[in-house]
Image (tube, rainbow over all chains, first blue to last red; front, top):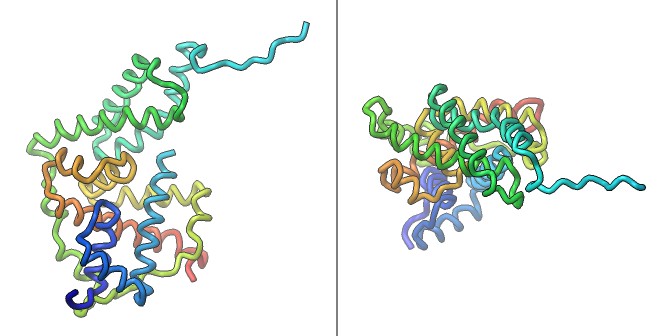
Length: 59
Length: 203
């Protein structure tokens, strides 16, 4: 499955997941990374929050 | 005789009522258009055009969605048209300079760890009911580089699919992802500094 993913690569892929599919092996590596990386977990939550905030902004 | 209680259906609404209700959303429509087009005159034109189209197509408004949503849908098409026309002009800033991945290097150390990890925002949902939060959001959106803001709004406000945006702007999906990543990283940081970090909202 390749090496562990860095926060730099993970955060980029987390953003990309909002806009379409990422390749499955990459998806697995991100999920694995998110299991132990608190910072990227927050980044993911905040990216999702931004999406909800923009939906509210539109209303 | 008891007076009948008034229950006016949208179809019975007079044209003037409809026009004034549409017009009450002008400010919002203009804000969205300015953010995406970064050109006040063009944005005015696009909003004008949207309101005209709304009045002409008033029958198309079923009342199932809110008037604002319906108007935003029309605006979306008008903005995409305007961007398409504008992107043929040489003055339209090139997207390339907003697609550079090296710009993100400063956010991470050499091993790829966050230099400044995202803070804990607590329960951010509770801020969505506050107008001031959206004022800060507006400020942060305006600080984004022009194309980054435009693409982010197309994706998150207009809810265009990734491939539609790529087609409209003739960019690759990789470029699109980099631009959206840039927008999210910058907005996240700006909201953290200007909202969540204030008054101890982060923990």
